[in-house]
Length: 140
Image 1 (tube, rainbow, N blue to C red):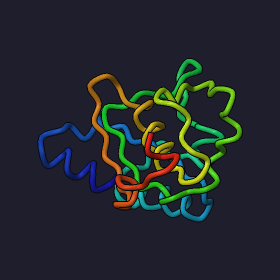
Image 2 (image 1 turned 180 degrees about the horizontal axis):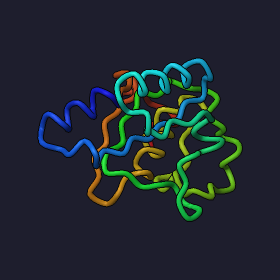
Image 3 (image 1 turned 135 degrees about the vertical axis):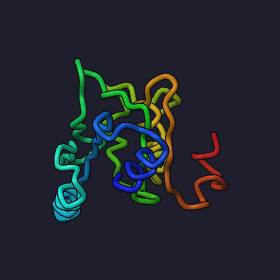
């Protein structure tokens, strides 16, 4: 987030108009992220501690908050992304392209990020190359 903010400011964005949000499941990583934001002058960043799939924290009027830019480096090939919990539907409508396979949550992350974008928003994600070439249940 800090590098993205620096990039935007260096390309003309008004720093007072940058609003940063994040969510981290691992408590120690969450604390490091909060501290890092404070040390770099972004004490007002909205960094929350919770599982993004099981307990999204950035909610507005009962829906996922929408963003102009969504960036993530999610866990690769995540097996436990709460697939079974969403078999009968998701209250936040994150899986508009269908519920991703139980194993390998990469496509679940992509859909979560897409669901958080404003209509003309942009998304950047770091994933392993395998997500593009896997077969079987992810091929659909």
